[in-house]
Length: 320
Image (cartoon, rainbow, N blue to C red; front, side, top):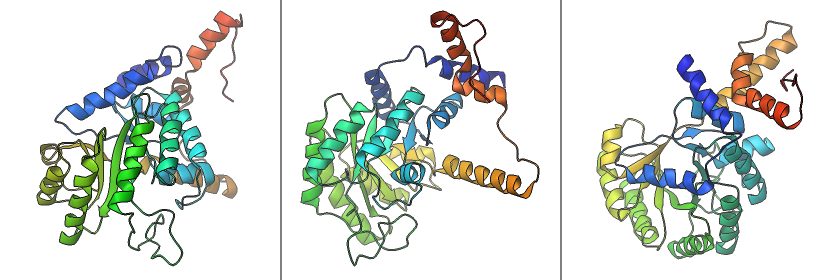
């Protein structure tokens, strides 16, 4: 407990003295340069960012689906605007100093809109973003596979269009944000899908200035070897690597392995259980200790600031 609280205290101290965005992005580049695997924590608000930091995570991630759920209370149907997404990202990057990796969907539009997306997310302090080649939003008469929770097949943009989008996104970069090309074309895990994903990765990795590739699918060591070769030596980020050891992943060029969004889902289940108990007049479920919450909120640091700058001798805790 003492170890955790020391970490929490350091996280809370960041409200007063913080590293530059450039150094935070540099820490992600250092992660990618090492022959090891990092599993970023899936976060959704400033407190979850600080909680992740307190447990020793070295990077955090924000999924597009989680953002849509949090901001709109809606499924991931491309209803969220880039400005709304950037606003949420800005809150997260203010929450802690871990590098934030975000799912920027398809760049929110064509090549020119993707450039605007890069500008907005770079200004929000994001460390890295992915731009995918999925055809979004789902077009009229499509199979529906581009919908959160659906079971249909994905549709994809052409190689030429996505290469142009990546080039435009990279040209828009001004302050060192990392840009990953993402593809879900290996999702079926078949030989045909492997051939397609390798063709796409060869084209994307040849784009000057690209920092890495992000692949979703059902992986085996044999397919990872081919994906590594097609990626041209760029760092690989993957989703769906269950059952493969970190050693095997690292050997095949994987540097980031994304985790399921369990913290957000668990928070929603906890809220539902609390509401059920309250509505039924029952006892409340376990909740976070007030001392722990105060530490994550940085209450002590704000009290010190009230004394120093507002001359308040008995500052309030800000908690009720």
